[in-house]
Length: 337
Ligand SMILES: Cc1cc2nc3c(=O)[nH]c(=O)nc-3n(C[C@H](O)[C@H](O)[C@H](O)COP(=O)(O)OP(=O)(O)OC[C@H]3O[C@@H](n4cnc5c(N)ncnc54)[C@H](O)[C@@H]3O)c2cc1C
Image (cartoon, rainbow, N blue to C red):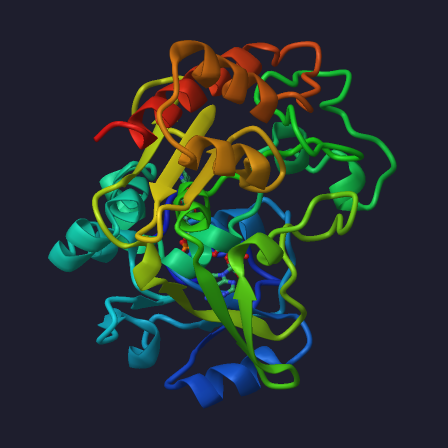
């Protein structure tokens, strides 16, 4: 069977070797289908389908999650926490009135993803699990991620690569929603035929290349994200997501920031576009930000401390300045009444 159409780029079949397309009717069926060797979850297909055409990945079957009603929509608990189905589109999240009031940082991150077409097709699960945009990886050069022993970006065109947490590979994580969700302390509910149900704190979901090179997260074969839980503790107006892009619109973050002051007074601060994972600022810095009134010097010192471990490559030193500026603004906003 051919690839589904309607995603960006050509929809023409590339012929022999195409994966089969299997729509799952319910969660139990999806789990069983995903348990087959080479089967992968399909969200909106906006990253997966082009990746297959570019021969970045070679799955045997695409298990479409879009028809599973349990995976679509947002459920609210009495305590004010929210459970977002993994196949919910970014557009649906961005246009949800209750989400806008309770979790505006997530709404903003969804609004700033790519183009309206991408937001209409793209799902939350797919956005979190999309593959990196490193041009050497996308061009299928034999880098670490393609089984090689070289990072072409390290001595090459590295203006968009990592300044923190890199090595041996220097990708940055491309997902905007991941940055906002980490600032809010989300939990990912993962399901698999063999592994059962797992609840994974978002900090434990993404992995650095030094720990795992073939993937950017801890999912094992056959697993899929079922839902993303947002805690009531993080709901309210004291949160934001902001990003700087090269072209100004329809673009991935060069650097982004998300922050939240939770209802217990604690603070969470996360940077995007700087590391192979969404980069949470050290807890001791978050605690200092949370502790009270800060002068201008304190704000500068905290932002510098947050970037103390930054190791820019030859062409991306500008990211340290940009991340510093976004952090300083976030710290001031966090302490504004
Ligand atoms: C021009 C352009 C600009 C873009 N700009 C941005 C941007 O600014 N910010 C941003 O964040 N993104 C951006 N994107 C990425 C885009 O938003 C993603 O392609 C999209 O969000 C992926 O969602 P999807 O549902 O289409 O995923 P798919 O393409 O269906 O899947 C992507 C990956 O996730 C896996 N997957 C899908 N669903 C699940 C699940 N439930 N559990 C586990 N794995 C799953 C798939 O197997 C695949 O590996 C851009 C993309 C393009 C092409």
